[in-house]
Length: 389
Image (cartoon, rainbow, N blue to C red; front, side):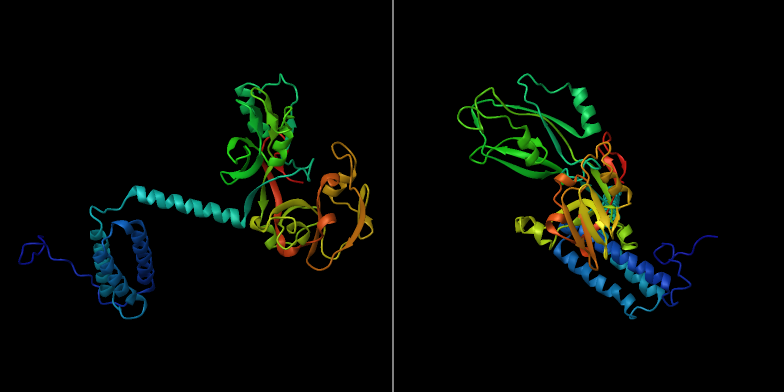
């Protein structure tokens, strides 16, 4: 059967039999989705839309909002309003059509949001900066080389050692008479640490991977004009630096269970006066990683090489290993002292007790400062890769 035509010869538009039916919850949900699409469209094309078109879109947006205030009551009214808003948006940008590239970009940003949410609420990467938890976890370690004939190994070895140990080889030779003025540490690509070696005027001469404290260990003695003066052709710094262990911190579990004695945990130093008093206020708080050796209500006593909790020698795996004086754990807990913990107070100590600045120096860790527990070493592969104990 032939379709009926209007006077101009065009097929007549088929009427929606439900046009005058009231708006359902399903229609309202679609209307909200359309509003989101319009706002997204405006963000993407803001610089392409002329002011008159933008004003028209704003006016139609306002009209379409009537779907949520009860002024638009039928499906036809909603459909007409949606069509007018959609067509006005499309016509406001010359040659506009749905773009696969734009959709892919949007998907990319969705992925970024998911990753950031995962980092914020579940597992945050963290780099061990110091040696306070050795040998359980490695901080940044420098290995200076004093021999004047020492050379960096071949490229294949450098790549292998970078992956396996996080190792960077360094040999810097003065191209001319060189005076070193200062070392300045910075973060590179948000996660990696570099040290800029500067002349007395503040000009950067070169950069070396690692913290400034470790780079200092690679610096060679200067010439006759002072420790930091290097004649042309002399070695300024040489050796290699192993990056600290890079770990995932579980930020989720402590929302459901209390921190447990024996955990390796991360906390921020905000309001811990014994730490923050020695830090430039511009730097804000820091993150520390230690072993949690005392929880609220515990009575602690440490007397080299042992740690006692409520009058008994600590039994948890991590502390027992430190006290065993076996393998790489040769010192145990050093010094003598005691501490009673109140509500919401925790005690942190490093496994490398003899070389750890911890609660013995600056006191309790408040519960509110706790970030999460050390979960897994993911880089490098050659030292402690795997679950943290």
